[in-house]
Picture 1 (cartoon, rainbow, N blue to C red):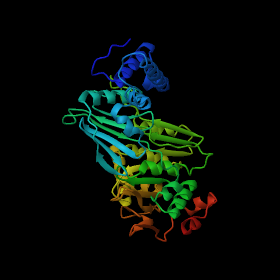
Picture 2 (spheres, one colour):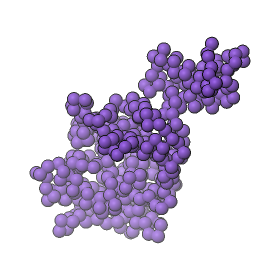
Picture 3 (cartoon, rainbow, N blue to C red):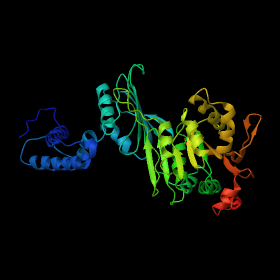
Picture 4 (cartoon, rainbow, N blue to C red):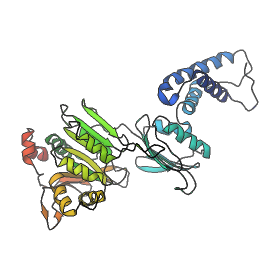
Length: 414
């Protein structure tokens, strides 16, 4: 028999009973026990309803709604769970307990959700539970992947002024192929066909743009055009790419342990990937000196793709020539510039427009020539008056298209 205070509700009683049963049975909702706990919640709700017929207890008016609310707190992420389940929410972030934002269609919205300071800390700990990554004063930043593929990033004081800063970039399943991107208006069918043919032909492609411009989405969609017989190795800081092909090995970086050991950086992953018999190498994003290792890998005859932050397609090329210099003083621009020119074939630049729509702004071809220290580049597609149009130019390496049985002229003119 449960003693009930005047402030008690059916939902609170059910949650307390569920948590007690979870503790007694040794269940771990964050590590494979979620389905069991959800079944347990349904059982407790049903049992409460039966007990309420013969005992004086707070009424259970909407059993299904109560079960979901309890599941959100016990299995999910409490008040944040509805946003994580909402397919229209692309990202959510917490600047403080009373500053919870979401992004819908590229636009930020301040929600009415108010959390407690400790509640934010508890939610972050719960999110990190299955990742094996840690967050403390000695390591005040953390990048991790949630069970649904969403990317979590957290920064804590005294790096932030006062509150924990939490970002969850959701893995929203909307676009799965280049044709789908064309249907949604990110590019034209003509551009989609050309990029698909370029992937099959084995050209090296860079997706460039600002944060949330759709670079990872484009990489995942480009990868769907890779022939199924090929072996793909992916290297990322945290898992974001989704590639549904038969022969794929995905690798992510690892933070150092409490003793400062065991760190695995992106440079190491790229080097190890070359020992794994790849037909394609995809690096989620280059930010630092790992760009050198990627260029060396692509220059060894392994086709690949990557992304990076840049303000234009041409600035992306410049950035590709400067990031490798971070690898050491023995790396010179005289070596890097011709290497980038010889290695990168296409740069696809994306931008978010004023309405929050992600668009391909330009597709730039790199023919492999350098003039007075500058890499020559030719636009293949450009956006003019809100229309992505073919410029009439052709990409380099027509022989690769022919070897793959493709007519690049037909792809561009179609």
